[in-house]
Image 1 (cartoon, each protein chain N blue to C red):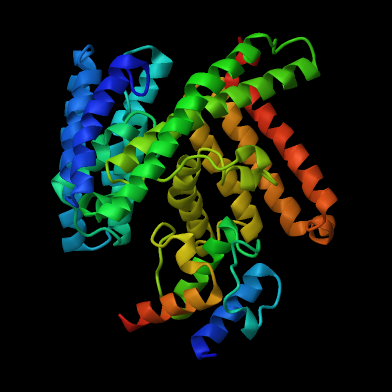
Image 2 (image 1 turned 90 degrees about the vertical axis):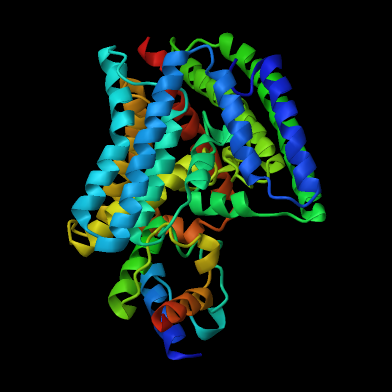
Length: 81
Length: 381
């Protein structure tokens, strides 16, 4: 697990109200009722403040950010730009 | 002639879909033909109302000017908030004039499809400000706005998704699959709209909204079932027709009467409308609120965002008391659901139990039907 994934899991744990572990990197956050509309907005705000990665609410579909791993990959690809 | 109704429409639709079929099966791009077919269909449907046709022409010109001035301005000057606010406001003026004319009985500006076209233009301006859209071609823009299957009542597609399909060339196998899915949607839509919806309407005509709580609730149920078959039927026909034209327009309904809670309901009912409001109003208002610390907590921010979101959605349906009440009703229910699910230990403890799921479904279904009772306006006449 890399640093970005660790930070994403920590941010998501705060938002979802339960601790997410390394083996949950591929957990579908929407299917499992861990992330809803409010949670997603909180996530976008945190990504901007902690990684300086600005994502608008309609920019990516939910399937593109459904798991902690997908979110971490997206953040890393944006940081590399 | 009106969209998805009557023999003349379906005859012309079939004639216009045949060349698309030919292009699709030969692996050619269908998008540009889709624009031509849309122009023919819209000109035919609006031929009897030249004033509406003139307003549509003026609207197209106005919005094209706005969009194609704003995109290069945003590219050159960056995200300037007042440029954005002005462009968005100017794009909304036709809809605001139409809504104003509804309450004042002045026929200022109105034509079929205006309410739905507004979402498409506003989405482009908002995403241009976000930096997500940096270019757009005029034919793709017009094809997106005028696409005849979704022109008058949605589903509300997104421009970036639409443009991909507009330019796409399907292989013969891909198109055959799309064609099969499209025909299936079209047929189910026809059964919903012309068999099940009239049956539900007959049932509705037997109900009386006044005379007691149970009678009113029964009216709400009948109205809800009628609305579902009528609108889901229309939407499925539109989606089926769009598929045949090579555009994978998103669906509008997904088993709404099986919703677990009110939040789930709005992910299943008139999906493209509720997701549009979620992405372009709710989320943005809430993000602004969290960053600007407007609220005591994020949860209270979400409650205000739900209220605002649904009130605007109600007002979009029409500036009448029952539509506004309908919006307020759903806003309050969504806010209450949010607080209940985030704060109540009872919910957290039992939410995965079968009995809780069934109870929650039953309560949700009845709350939804009360909403339809309000929406029907029958209580206010």
